[in-house]
Structure formats: structure tokens, C-alpha cells
Image (cartoon, rainbow, N blue to C red):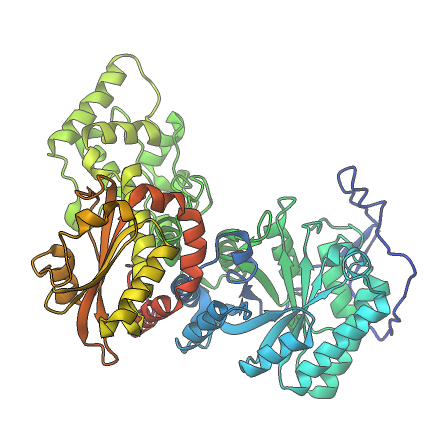
Length: 627
């Protein structure tokens, strides 16, 4: 067994065209767990001069969940810049460009003016797609170039020669248009490295040399088959894949990226292994969001980079807690409590002996100064030694109460919780209290601090109805207050029958027109004829004062006896002057029955509103609080 490291190769690789696909059945039997083979070839680590991170949160990450709104994308792009874009560690982020919403997101993020992350595109291996890239003036785009026979033969129904010619032709066209192609070698860990991948890579390097422009290659471990083990054989060895591209195909390490998936729990170690063996960049997503089991967690790459290089200034890791809060509150994603670096309990310990050590010196059981590096103090564990101050600290820290709402140790409820804890120990308890146990006590004695399921229901109803009404309010036909406005109200109400009453006033509060959706209640609504004065109603006064949206609390309708929510917003003319108020009474139960479909419908289509909000964030340095 020998240590092998080649400094460069001059071998020319010839495409090995085949009549039948090479599926490596000895490694991928399908009816059994995949096999790992070893050939006793050992390589020494040889990282490049610079290592970077690239991001695919808005491409691969978005394929794993409900599509993000433009506003959400803009906020996360700001986070990426603050985390590692300022130093260039997070070098680039890729975007879809197919829908109007995709293109709006690109526009808004470009308006930030950040040098890093650079905004790049992703397309299929199609020249029409490439024209979109050219028309949107991208400097770089990813291109789907599947390399395994599973994809070439079984998915694309092509020969290797046909696939190689198609990929090379697309890359050449990109270079002619001044666009850097980033060829995504999809499913590389099931591909014939010497028979297809290296010949294609050498062809791409020829195009690069001829054009004087880089041609990048993303090594995509699509199914997570890659392994980091020394001595492992191709095509599964991460070390060998990276080094063969560099040493034998002549691809500069800075042109290579690794893109992994976590199907076999190796996504982080494989990415770092790629770095250590010369791959210039590792591709990841915030919190590992991605298809199936997800991609390399970007926050983990930040920590590993600092660990490997000692460059503490490369990333602002304290922002991670803010990003996690955004995911939980804005995206409604529950981060696992034990998730590294940002999970609720990741730096907590509940074992009695460990808790005692933590009390004496937090360094004994804390991975590093989490308060300084992650803006995460060590959670306090409540025992009979904690005291009332500890109970108050637990409440303020774990419920994330803002400074002005902090609970004092003198609060009567704090005393009741403390007494309950002490009673348990007096009864013979010897273990510390878990988070869930203390939370239950706080909920019992201080229920006002908690958001109920009903509160979530109300928020969901308010969010959905608000976006719908804002969309309607932008329709310029409303400013005429005539037959066209009435027709628009009825058409809108017909599309969303959970709206029981839709009405429009002028800027004096005088009712100009209204749509009654259920004929059974038409008589009752006739008590509110055209000309009726609504000027003293809350739903009218607030939008007139603020020019903004207003959502009232739930109430029982006097007309239908249904539980409804009233939403209203200002109607403005072309000079943004308020000319009236649009209001809607929506039946809660019927609205919630359509909640899932409305979230799909409203969020992606809500571009103008999302754009305005995102641009407002930009005016505040891209760090404005989420509304």
C-alpha cells in the first residue's frame, strides 16, 4: 500500500461510448444496501490556497419546501451577506430564473449591491434556458450536465457521445456570450469517471483555454453515495474524485465545487473532505434544506472553515441565532431542539452530574463560548439550588422575552413556580427539571406569555386574507368607484367565496359599492346601502390614518352569525394619494379550509407587495425587522 499524490498529468482521456449503461451493480445492487469497495490507494490531503462556500438555498433548498416569497428570499440573501459574504467566504448563491417571481427575486437581491455572494443562475441543458441567462445579464450560470449512465441512458435516453456533445455545445455557447458555465456533473458518485467524466472535463478545459474564461465544474453527489474513507475506490471515493479531476484531467482546484446530499449521513464530512483534497468550494444551504435528506448545512461549513483555517474573522457566526429565529417565526419551521449551533437545547445539559459541572465552570460542558460566538448563552438547568432568580432567568431566556418585558424574580408567579420546584425535591426528586417540565409550570402560572394554537390560527387567517385584499386594492379600476369597481368586487368575491362581504368607500367613509356573496343574506345587508357612513368604523379610520393594512380581531358576524375576520387597506391613486378604503369580511372556517392552496397561490403571486417590502428592507441596510 503506498501514499500516492500526483502533481499533474498529461494523459488524454477518450470517451468510452457504450451500447449498454454502466450501472456498477456490484456497488449499487438496489435490492441491498450499496457497497463500498477499496483499492488500497491512499492520497495525502492537499487543500487549495483558498477555500470558499457557495449557496443553493434558493435553488436546491427551495425544492424541499413551500416556495419562498420574494421578501423571504431577500431577507435570507441579507443573512448570507452578513454571515460570510462581507469577507467573500460565501462566494456565490444560485437562483432559479423561470418564473416571474424567480426573476423578481433576482432583481431585488441585485439591488442590494453586495459584491458577495455573487448572484448566479441555474438552468437545464437547454439553449433556450441559456438565452434567459443572457437576457438577464448573468455573469455565471449552473447547467445541468448529468454524467452517470443512470441519467444518460435511463433518464435522457441518449448515448454518452450525444450527452457529451450536448453539454460541450451548451458550454461553448455560454462562453461565446461571455457567460461562465458551471457544469453540474450530476450523479458523479455513480458515474464512469475515466470513461465519461474525465473526457468531458478535459473537453471543457479545452474550451476554457480557448476562450480565456473559466469553466467551472460542480461535482454533485446526488444520491449521497460519496464516502470520505482513505483507500476507498472510485466512483464513490470523494478524495479520488477530486484528485482525478485536478491531477489527471487538469481542472484547476478553484474551478471545482462539491455538492452533497445527506442520504447516508455523510454530507458534511464529504464536503470537508472535498475541501481538504483540493476542491475550491463546497456548496450548501441554510440549515441543510434540500431535496430528500438535504444538502450540506451552510452554518456547519462556516464553523469547519474557521476550525481548519483559524480565520475567526471570516464569518459572523453570532448571526446564526437571528437566522434560526427567522426560520422559526417567518417560515414556520421547527428547528429540532438538539440541532447543532441553533437548536434550543444544543448547548444544554440535563444530567445531574453534568449540570453540576456546568454550574461550576461552563467550559467543562460547553463546546466554546456560545454567548460570544453564537449569541447563545448556556441554558440554565433548574434544580433545588437555582433560586427565584434562576427561575426568572429561565423564563426570560427560553421564552426570548424582549428587554422591556423581562420578568422579575419578585413576580408572584415566579414564586409559585419556584415553590413547585422545591416541593418536588422535598418529595425526594434528585434529577434536574427538563425544559418541557419547566415550560409546563410557566404555562400553568403565566399563560399570558404563550401563543396559543388559536393565536396561530388567527395569524394564519390574517396573513392570507391580508395578501388577498392587498392584491385587489392595487387594481386601478377601484379608484373610479363606479360600475367597473363593482364588477371587480363581484369577480373577486366569486373567486374566493369565503368572503361574505366586500366593500369600498371613498376617503370620507361613504360606501360607494359592495359585493354580497350569499344571496340569503342580501336583505340584511340592505341595511347598509350605498351612501352609508362608515367613517367612524375602526376598519376605515386606521387605513386612512396610516395608509397601511389593518386586520381586526375575530368576531361573530351580526349578519351571518359566522366567525369572521375583517381586513381593510387603503386604496391609492397613481400618485399614492389615499382615495378610499377597501374592506372585506371573511368567514374563518371556510378561509382555513382553503389555507394550504391559498398559501401556494398567494405567496408566489404576491410579487409586488413582496418586492416593496424587500426594497424597504434594502433602504434599511437589508437588516430591517420582519413585519
